Amino acid sequence: MNGYRLNAGLIWSAALVALVCCWYSILPAMAGEIQNKLVSESMIEQAMKRGTLRVGMSTFVPWAMTAKNGDLIGFEIDVAKRLAQDMGVKIEFVPTKWAGIIPALLTGKFDIIIGGMGIRPDRNLKVNFSIPYDHTGQAIVANKTLAAGFKSIEDFNKPDVTIALRLGSTAVTAVKQFMPKAKMTLFDDEAQAYQEALNGKAHAVVGSAPTPAFYAIKYPDKLFLPIEGTFTQEPIGFAVRKGDFDTVNYLDNWITVVAAEGWLKERKHYWFETKDWEGLVQ
Image (cartoon, rainbow, N blue to C red; front, side):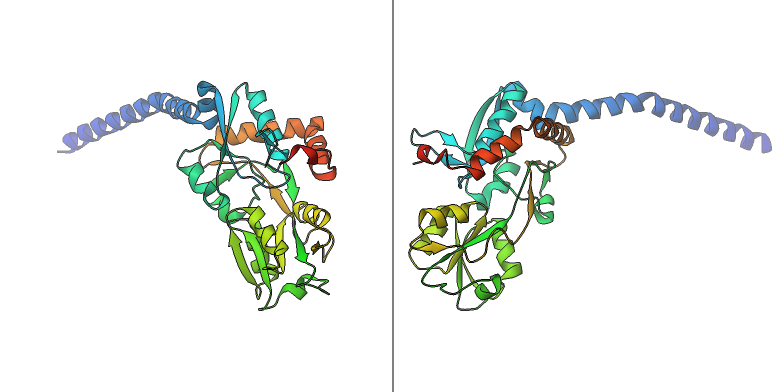
């Protein structure tokens, strides 16, 4: 009986050793297959095989605008074109309403969002972000008649005050935090929000700088800046589908390189600190 138990024990031990050896022999191969699958399915690899980078974006000054000749121009357009150029592929812009831009990315309508998207924890639950390639903040421009005498954010934090905003933007989050008592009117198109203030139907518009300042300069008889500068600060990054670590790694390194070149700073200066481009826009 003891001999039987000994033999059985030896058999099971041998089988276990064989199983472990077999597992360790196939483990590297399995790891390699998984890695190859991840690489082959990354956005970068897909875009390079396709020969085209599909970019989801939405128009707003001065990030992305339509020129008089029909072409898209702006800071984000320059960034997207440079990225595609460095990847050695063509570029295809896919204009998308901002409120639905993340769902559109997740369903594969384009490869990446390059549209001044603020890096936020709630968004990060749905997409992966690159490191920041820009920083911005929310500013406010107000109607001279409706908001006469307003000099602070607190002046707008009242139930009888209406703030016009672009749907799905970080401006909505900022107003909820800093002006929770104010009434919000939401629009798919940012230009509609500014038109609401110009028409005297909203006390103010909150949007990413420097757009509010541009509108105050363009319409000095109707709009003004109740506070100088921005009242929030937020990092801006590229957004891609979750799990695509190869693509995030590439984007992070690309941002590091072009930032070190001074190219991002030069483009930011042109679009945000000069008006040399104004005559190109419709």
